Each structure stands twice: as structure tokens, then as C-alpha cells.
Image (cartoon, one colour):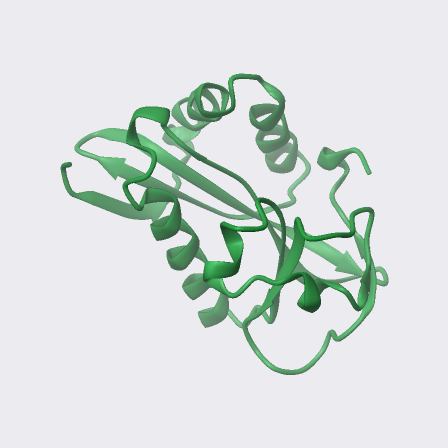
Amino acid sequence: MTDITFRTAETTDREAILNLNIGAFGRRDEAEIVSRLEADGDALLQLVAVMETDIVGHILFYAIRIDGRIGAVGLGPMSVNPWAQRAGIGSGLVHYGLRHLQDGGVSLVFVLGHETYYPRFGFSEVAAAPFVAPWKGPQFMAVRLRHGPPTSGRLQFPTAFGV
């Protein structure tokens, strides 16, 4: 497989990102979430994986309020072109994004995702348990990037998620 580069998404990547999300998930839901997060100003960081000149992966991180104040970040959606899956692109995006967030002072990241995939990056159900959220269980996880607050509270997700 050709070399993959990871970079911050640019405005000119928008159409490719939306098409990638539709293709990867086989529906429009995730592309609509991306669009809504952008329109509402809730998208904090978007990264892409590029192979030659094609965007083959995308990850979005968004703001989460805890007890009414911005206090954490959420991961998702993340998409990889189906023909390029299982080549480390998703893992590369997650590692690159978490490093960027940690360097930026973010202490806590939440994800609603596959319970056997995200623990390899340090996400756990235990880390999410002290927080009140619309979701509970093994698919709702968090990873702590820095020690300190917040340690508990009620999570408020962007309206793009409909909760």
C-alpha cells in the first residue's frame, strides 16, 4: 500500500470528507452529523489520511460540555474508505488526533464505539462511568489524556447527535 500522510482537514476537503463518510457507512447519517457539527461550530479538530492525492480516512473531534461548561472532547465520526480498511489508517488517525489533543491541553476524550477496537488506544468503560451520559455500557468509553478535573459530571453532547 502507498504511504499515508495525516494532516488537518482543509476547507477544500469538505466534499471528499462527506463522500467518504457516506461510502464508509453506507448511509448519509454520519455525513450529516459532520455537516451539523461544522455548521454549529462544535467541530474542534478534523484530520484526514491522504494516499497519493485521495482522502482515504477522516476523524472528527467535537466539544462536550460537562455541567454546562466545556470540559471534554468527543471522538466521531471516524471513517476509512472500505478498500483501505485494515491497513492502520483508522489507528493512525486516532493516535495522531489524541496526540494533538493532549498537546493542546485536553484532559478527557469520550467515544461511543466498538468495545474491542477503542481500548487499544486507552479508552475504557471504567473511565466513562463517573459521568452521566445518554449512553452507558461497554461501547461508551473515555480516555484520560491528563490528570485532574473533570472527574465526574453530566455530559451535554452537541445537538448534531440528537440527544
